[in-house]
Length: 256
Image 1: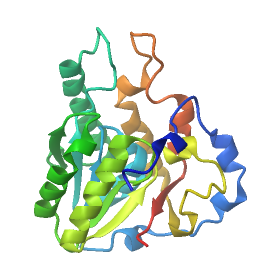
Image 2: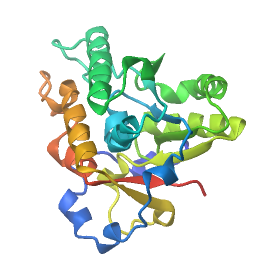
Image 3: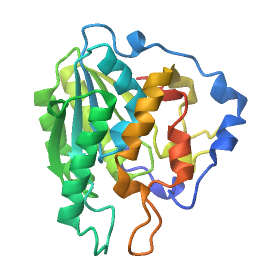
């Protein structure tokens, strides 16, 4: 799937506005799931995040609710996100990478998770595709057969997201672990009834008011991604993007 034609799933402009998604009746008719159905009791949840902030965008509400229930959780940070501000004088890559690691730890704390819940693989940002095999090996050694593993979607439109999903799929197959995928940038380039999206496999998890509050606070910890860049580039996460990910539900693509 990583080799699919990404030109068809471009992440440009503001994308499909949240009001368009909210006006689509089928969005509100997708089957509801529960916390226990997604991550059964006594199971460990492992979230594979391509960049710092993806764990919040994709699964922040889920993580907050798991933390409240004392469910074992691990967030695997594939990259340090140091390439998000090309050409920046304020945030040269080494400084930005260190800052984004701090933002990730701070964001997890706001979700109720300790720094020890985070594992860093230090794959170069933007180069995940070249490291699929090594990531898959690491995950295969790390995962347990009864883990519930969540990654970004294999056709999400961002190359690091797709490569992380592919590596996770390989490791889950090796360990017979359950692999659930989460769309992040799909909400940007897709539109209602888009035939490229496996809607029939998608479920939605209602977030408690407290979990949604924690998710919003955790996202604000990633301030480097929310502020306009000194190069004149716009913020990586614009309001149109965050609006799509700060719903009262999180959406998950179940295994086929």
